[in-house]
Amino acid sequence: MSGLRFFVERTGDGAGQPVLDADNGEELMHVQPGTAIVLGSRQPESSGTLYITTKQVVWLSDTDRRKGYAVDFLSVSLHAVSRDPEAYQDPCLYAQVESPFEMKIRSILFLLVEVLRFTLY
Image (cartoon, rainbow, N blue to C red; front, side):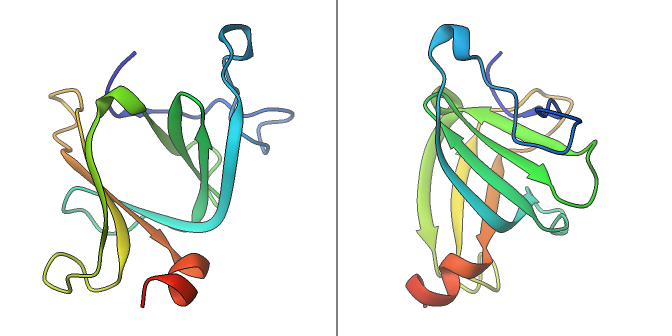
């Protein structure tokens, strides 16, 4: 499945990492806790964890186990570090993504609180 999509499949009792497609070689490459996500012009979601795999980027909420999003790499047309306060008040990782028409989301901001404090300012 391509584009931005809802994603809630977690390992273990539903409180763990995202379920990966290991049969097709998907591996977890990086985990970044303390990450908020902003979809389009919406308000930031509560803090969650960002998972980067060999095939996709997954964000899972830390407070609502039924909330998460994923986007495969082929659906990300642009990504950058943004420090422009007119685009968003805090530095963030910006990504333009494909998404189903019903979601009406064309951009994602990842607010990496711990990383940003030390590297983006």
